[in-house]
Length: 618
Image (cartoon, rainbow, N blue to C red; front, top):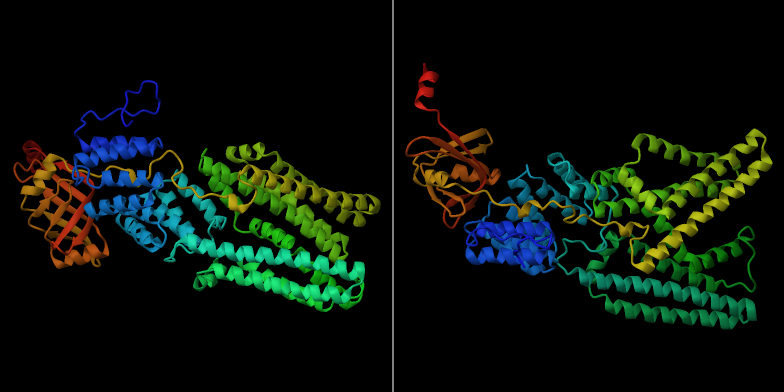
């Protein structure tokens, strides 16, 4: 139900006092949208449009609200149609342009149109934060992080408490990638088509790598276990026919080969997976070709045996290497500390809380990777003193704790995830032990140093198990996991309605009459040489929605194309009691040869009385 008395339903919205007033029905629809009830909002918006089919009393408001309701219901085509009608009724409305841009971004192949509408909304209302947020969202979806950060910072300058700008600015600083990273939103192709092509490539890579690993185990078992060298080589060679068959089968399912290079360029892990598969095939061929008669010695042995063992390890362990590499690269990408500050500033928002937890896990992986890298360096270089570098971890954590502090949101997120706290504590403890082991020889404490070294290595293994357990649990329950893919973009989060749901500016009866009957109307606009004023003579007409239609000179048209923000001044044509100024956006209507000015702000002032005039003159 759209209306109700309040009664037992705390979410009920009272019906309008005047059921015949479409603007009041639009207000009811906006109230329902604020309570996240798009079905009721759509019903109320439809009532407003039924009462005023051309939406003259509320200009484009009814269609904008209907479009927003359709969008929240997942009916994207109807959302675009309603938004396009709103733009047709009020081409100079920044809210209508923003609504159309927001609706178009959900339609495959129309990202460029969406960006053009968002740019118009920013141009029409640079003082409003929401058009800047939409422009930032479109840039973020395409991976244009510098443009996204600039747009979000401008929105926050205008409205520091904007939750969407805060959260998405944090994602931009993290270099976040949307789930369909392989697809460029500007491509004129359905992302489901490129998604099928990506799945075919990923499946091919996975099947080939698993097949080669299993085949290599079978070849080695046949060679080293049973001594059947010829059988092992022949069987290993026949596996390549299966590789060819899988390749041809998967290639047949990739119907968009012209987009594959762009997909590989945009999706780092898809290109890495494909590349490592090709390398694994080449390594497998080499392993089978130089298959030794017996198990080769360790890598420290002769060069041929070490080469064979390295190639065999690449075929068998490439999946694990790729997984570890992905976890580390994703953890070290972006600026998580700066992103955490933005998420914490967004307040108690559900999306911000989720992103805080995921970002803290990225920080935890970074913390763990430092002592792990130090350990590998010590083993490779055989120099225990390098372990002193691990002490940088607790020092940096302590400095960050002092400088940044721990806002309530971060404290709550870390306290609610015990696995996260355990990983941070164990990594810091392992770093301290490794540092003690590195300092022990210089201090003459060699036995305690040896104990600290092995204890630190043992502690480093525990966070890996904790991370794996946390990941498996998240995957099993379908919950956000401790990985970058769990970060989500803020799209309509927070209790604040977006700017494209706001009511349009209307003209009072007095102001409408003044513009209708006055013969001394002045149009002010910006010119390359500075502000200019032009006497129009009269307004051609005033639409029922308050839109002004002016017959203006060509220089005013050219100025409106450069900067559509204009102002129209008029005085009371009868009693000279007041003056009115309408600030709005001018859009040229070439068919009617008129400038259509959509009001953004109306200023009305009164002239002084006679006694005030005598006093001022005297």
